[in-house]
Image (cartoon, rainbow, N blue to C red; front, side):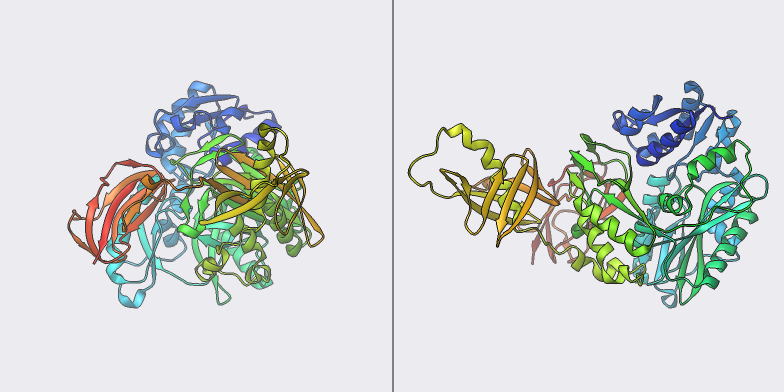
Length: 614
């Protein structure tokens, strides 16, 4: 039996595998980059081994170092998690060659299915080779890996070469494999997948369907099980195709077969030969632990003849440190607090006080709700996210809540174009109008005692300024003999952590937390501003500032100062959190300054270039 497991991964999935291992009495071993030295997955493991460096290419993609780490730490098995080397057949072989148990499918099955090009050939399909106008739109896709990395939609044939280059670079960075291919892009279909589990004794389970249609940049945001609104016949067809794919490669372990459902038909996309990020919704519906079953299969145990019955509905939302209103720009900084109400499963790789850096995926956590019906599960998850305490970088929390409550989603009519259609409305600022006042009163309550007793003469109004959703907001309040006051509102109570206000006879309670200039009032995030702006922070018109910390990976060919540029023209590319972000010219004009060079590390707000409009 397995006694010690090394997880060849990081963050949330490493913590999740360790949880099951601890429950089973199995010793755990973590690996970590220098950037992850104090990460949660390192702190909860029984032992940890350093992988020198910070980039994935130097650390989590170095299979040779990970195998050495497993041997050095005395592990007898390796779990790959998802991403990184989880679908790398050579890594699986290296683990086995070292005398270790591989908690995953046979290398031959990985080889057959992990490359999406070979998987399509196995299912009787083929990628596009000579793309013409008639084929558009098409999707450029990485042959290895997943998570939306190395994927580009091409609608103009003139853009194809540039998008192929960008996809290859992104895929090589994320997976160590720059192979890409092109396939037709089916717009506005539903992304539906089937969880499979197979043992080494010939049994294959199809564990229902999942809908993962709500995606940004081809990376899933909200997932649920079972997929709503599928006919019994289509569900049976999806199950049969998934089982057929598994049997075709003598599969063993957990895997997922993905489809695009359009016009009532199922179109095979790929088979992921690993555990999926969204596996908790299947666990909730079937009442199982997929990691525990992976361990059992790796030990040679047999599955029961039939899977357990499905019960109820489960919905999962991925909480990202990103700003959806600014092109999904990833965010960094200190995560001060992360808690959700009881009854919600929270899978996370970080905890209070952790720093969110630039090197890896910006997902903070997955929140999962399970209930007897879909409507109940959706309502429960939306309410829990709304009440969650998420203090730190900007997140997609508001987007998640609004998405879950959107009529197109609640009615089950969503598809992969959901955010293309609705992103503007879903990210429109809607801050609580009383939040800035609550923040100011909480701050004032801590200052009142420093100034001695109350004066007999009425004091003038005090003014505080906050940035909320990109807007400057000014609030006014007064110190009185009886405490704090504000026009149109009765201040029932005010201290550093709680403010109670009454308007029109209705009292509301506001939880307030402050971390330097950052203030959180319930679900509203504010930044305290100085009374007078600092003139030294002003930039010339047309300045392009880094929207996130990251690395300049490319500058447009031949781009030099003095060149004429067109509005929307790509000038340079930043890599942050394993994704490439394009910086474009804001207007047609002259490139007056170019401060960026490939390989340069930049911080938020760094001046990259200046375009003078013509």
